[in-house]
Image 1 (cartoon, rainbow, N blue to C red):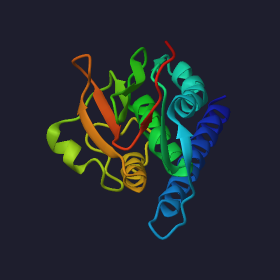
Image 2: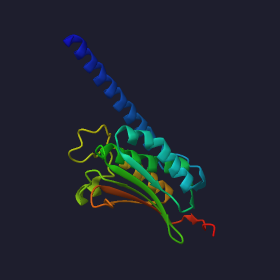
Image 3: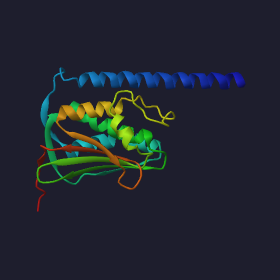
Image 4: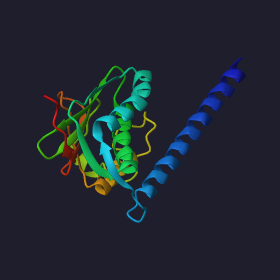
Length: 198
């Protein structure tokens, strides 16, 4: 009946609202944990294993949205840092790409190394971001234009930026590598590069 249909829509709206509020609270708590006064535990982190974990965790979210999520991580490297910060950094960047990339798009996570540094890139085929918007993107609650259809909170990139600072990493936003979309680049200047076996 029409009454039952209306009730179902109302329940769906309430659930969506609760989910959004829960996510907002979770992200505000994450920002608080990344405050300079909040203690950090430094440890050696193997980047290959770490980003594989993020990839496996978020793969179902990408699949549910009909997105192709690919991981290229053949270069062994480690950093010395806080695992909580690294998780917040990478998870928010990948989650952001999943949220803003339309269905049937693609997202690629890639780890590359040079003699003394490592770099992780997250590239998507989403709507991209103008240079002007990139300058504002790390501000809290900034969501840009034409994103009302997503359930973002505007905190993902602010969290990623704070986490990168805490790790001594460099985070930049660039044009997508395939001519469309957005690429987030995370550089680790003090990485430990492992030699591949001959």
